[in-house]
Length: 196
Image (cartoon, rainbow, N blue to C red; front, side, top):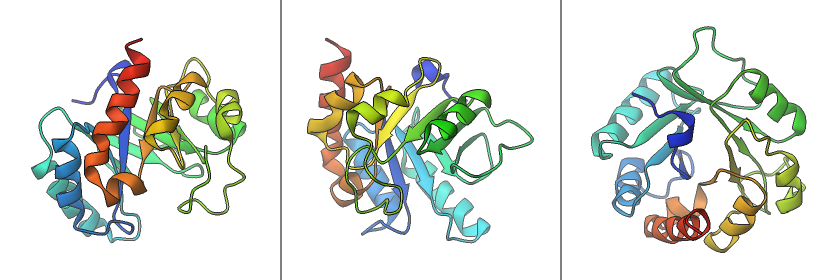
């Protein structure tokens, strides 16, 4: 069963198969050991069968209660790019990547459960989508009706600025793929803001 939007984890790990320095299931398992409970599998370059096999391998190592969302995939939980059409059969959980106000407005109109907004800070993994929004630009793209995850160059010491700008949570790729234990630092930063 997919979570309701208000129960989405505050930290989403973008599990990008092309960027993973080690096997993705190994990285995801270690991230989960340190408290990660939300994962977006991004493996668009793989054939559908291999994507499904990788998703199954991740499910096998993640503890119960974890959310696994497939980017561009099929199934109960999917994540769409800024240009992909909304599925004709609505998944039980659906999010969209957004870079502009028009993207966010579209996600709101589609009644997406959440949106990734990027790039918030300078990042090597999102060339072509700049310049970085910064906290002020992020704030302009956080509607009250849609949980927004800040993505792009978000380090633990930038979490408070993202949530202060109106983000529901943060989405992280590179730092967690390279060093899964850093999840604990993100969760501590999130907890410090949300519990105060």
